[in-house]
Length: 355
Image (cartoon, rainbow, N blue to C red):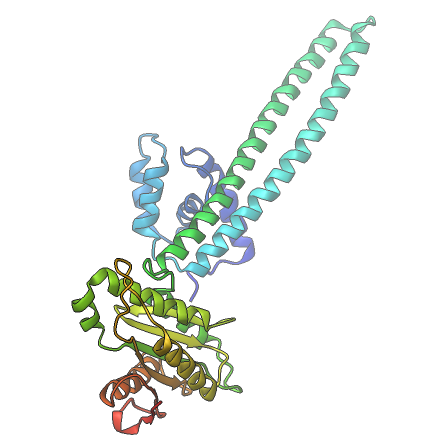
């Protein structure tokens, strides 16, 4: 369930109350600051409110560090979809405010010009000096208002730029968080996210996704014989072949060590088996040489387990069935593709396809 359940009118009121509080702080007007003050005025986060009241009881303002710490400590469990809505909402509000400020600036400028013209005309006539003086004060106040509006517009523009930079940084951080640094494939966390999203979007009227799990055969012997740096080269070479053979919404990931997974959201079981066999034979036919002496090492092979999704099973059960099929491939001589039967991942239920 969403963290925020307020109506449009309620959230608009909380926004109206939040903005003045945000503007008095030393932190920029960004989504993290907005989330902190939104929850403060909404009264939905008592521990956060108590912490802010304590920090600001002597008139102190919140800086970037204290605002970030409040967010981390009291709001950090906020889900990604809610965070995206907050960013988008604040960006729209600031954009609307900037447009309103620009409009007000234009109107104030026109009013100032009219006052200046009126003051000039009265100054050349026999008008009451007090009237001229009053108009001059109005003109002075109008110019001050123009300066304040211009400063507000500049700050809003800066805040919009900060939000855009934050959005880009969040995007980069997210990509880095789900990428495997050695191979450039998605890492285990990224795969888990992709699988969860895939299963949540399944249309039961069509076939479900398929999953390949691959493991480099006798990898420990490669490491022992040629060293870990060469082992890394083998892993990268297998990853490159996997990446070259996927397309569209497919996801290839390094699941850990020398193990890989490939999620195929739009591929039938027969298609998944054919793909696994193609990748297996490509790796079997490849040759990897040492960088120091160009020596060709022993043949590298990979074993596969393949599973098609069964309606109602969890992500863990789906993975376990594919893993059970991989276990059969390993036990039956390696360098082969084994298809998991529907149901529990029992080795006796798997159908083996030997090349």
